[in-house]
Amino acid sequence: MKLSQRVLALANDNRIAVLRWLAEPRIHFPPQVHADIDEVGVCGVFIAEKLGVSPATASAHMKLLVDAGFVAARRIGKWTYFKRQQSALEEVARHLTEL
Image: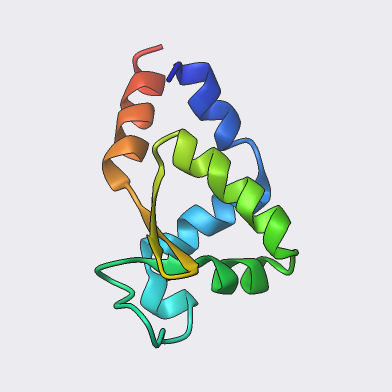
């Protein structure tokens, strides 16, 4: 993915908030019943609730973050869990500092 496309994925306050929350999921989200939050990530339902948006809107935000490589998605049953990918964020930061 091009750097410009990855930067566009960050050009939204809701998506930036999600990335901040996913950096410390135990602080920002309630305990989950079906999966370990550190191992699997945060259920998309909790992300939608915290953002105060519909599940469809949260899903659109998460798709952009996944496509940019900033978040990994994992489907378990009917739920999708999201986990921050720190290395992708560091890579973009490195590219931006080289400009």
